Image (cartoon, rainbow over all chains, first blue to last red; front, side):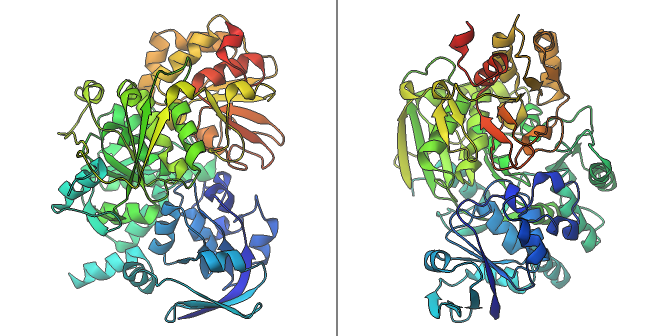
Length: 165
Length: 419
């Protein structure tokens, strides 16, 4: 699987109140949520993001509330992957549970800059930065997480299991 | 192998010894959702077209965030819970009138008990660790999966131990101990880990203080917070418990990723400045912060003990003319208790509004949203950008005593200033 996209770059501790402010959580409609994604820290994001774009951030991305609306809003906007130094744990499980890919990498997170064009090769465990002409190696995604991504999230995985039984 | 409390609970449940970092699939005792997180889960379940859920007695639905419904959209969300609860015979559904802030409500009602494995689609589910249970926050899809399968996938956390010793200073409570701890290790200082709280100081704390401490484990990135159950736990739970319970203790020589020891005699009442719960200063060094609003309540500090502390400071006093004080008892029982003890009268005479239980202002939902440039001292748990309202508003986290006295002074202050 190759993922290619333009980068939106953020810093440490991007929290779920910033990804989707609670004042908009009176709906679970993913399109309505997506319109307000990141607006408290980046008004351009929801307006200008393109399908396939990639978010790169530093440590503890997605900290705070357990709201799955946060990864859902990012996924709905077309974000194909989030790369960070580290992820908050509930955000991490929520993203994989809904089939949104996350990659933890110190080197890539620190070196990649806003608007860089990057390619992610999961089979080769590396990221190419086409803008900077650099390659970063990444740790393999755990098998359990890969299976979840491949089946399109946890519920589809469970649904498949129920059909089998 | 010698095990920590968290490892013991998970091992016993799984029927085999677990190791830190191992991925497991585990049966849960309780799966919790609220009016924000449950609608997404329910939508997933409806897609499956099931006639029944795994176990209607193990599901808890509490519409507490935007309730009493703040607008039409919120009313629709709450209705999704109500309809689902009716259709699937969910035993623990709490309508307005019985409803309270979920993490105060579930222990009070004895729905969660020591030794349990609890997941909740709310990050502060870690609160129940205060009873010696394994409790962790998850997302809506996890909640959906648990509602249909009774199971949840987890990575066994490494444990970190926090030992508190020494004599507590006046006005220092659970809130100050956890804020201080987060300020020492940072908002990702316990990422993916279990935070175990122990020592002579913890042993001497009330359940209310213990709940406050475990409640904010998530603010250090932890998977769960946990305190070994003891006599205090027993006194709290034995009349409430709806199920049998088990007390677990860690083994002598269990493996901890890190052990911290804090001398509490050096800890003063804390205030977390915007925009992170780790951004703490002693309250005595924050007395130049002028404020517009004070909120006393939430899953962190909305229990009867918290209201008693606030009332002891507000008794026969008036709050500052330019401050709005909002007091929110966390459950109906707490509200009634406060009423019977005369606390509500003290609050109203002091110039406060007293609200029905709701998470409301904590997350900038309703019942006390801040305007641009406004500042609030809150006994809540988060002070992120825009958390309680406008992006340019500010939240300062503190304990109920500091919050109450700040309402009188019109700025952050110490209780001694009003004695």
